[in-house]
Structures are given as structure tokens and as C-alpha cells.
Amino acid sequence: MSFSVTWGSKLSWMLSKAEYDEALLKAHRLHAGVYRRVAEKLGIDPSYVSRVATGEREASEIRRALLDELEEIQRLFR
Image (cartoon, rainbow, N blue to C red; front, top):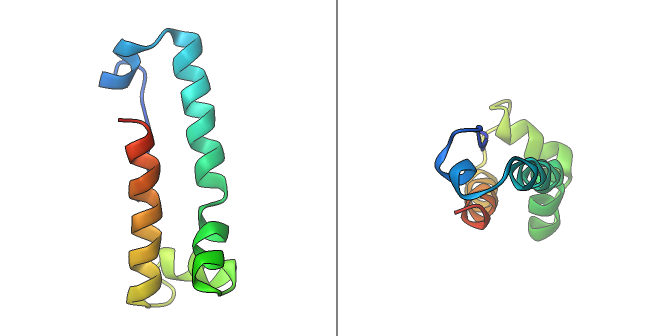
């Protein structure tokens, strides 16, 4: 699952192109550390969070924490 904003979306109509571009870059920066942030919250290695995210491993607590983090990022852009 990934979050993306496309030009022409609801968000883009509220922003200038420059503001939209900055919001998109900010979203990318927030996503860049998502595995690390989840790992820190749970006291585990970020590589394990990555393996859960890609389906290589199963762990419901990590999956839920990852989804919570991604939902929080989406809330920042509503």
C-alpha cells in the first residue's frame, strides 16, 4: 500500500503547482522513514518491518503499526 497524490486530485485543486510539489516532496520524506519509525515504536529492527510490509514475514502487531503510521501520514494531507 502506498499513498500518492496526483496532480488534478482534490488536494491539487486547493494548492498552486509549487505548493502541490512541496506537499508531494513532504509526503515522500514522511514515507522515507516509515519502517524506521515503526521499528522504533516497537523496539525491533527496521528490516523486519520491511519484510512484514512486503509479505515475506507475517506479524499482525507490526502490520497494524505500519498501517497506523501510513494512515497518520494520509491524515496530514486531508
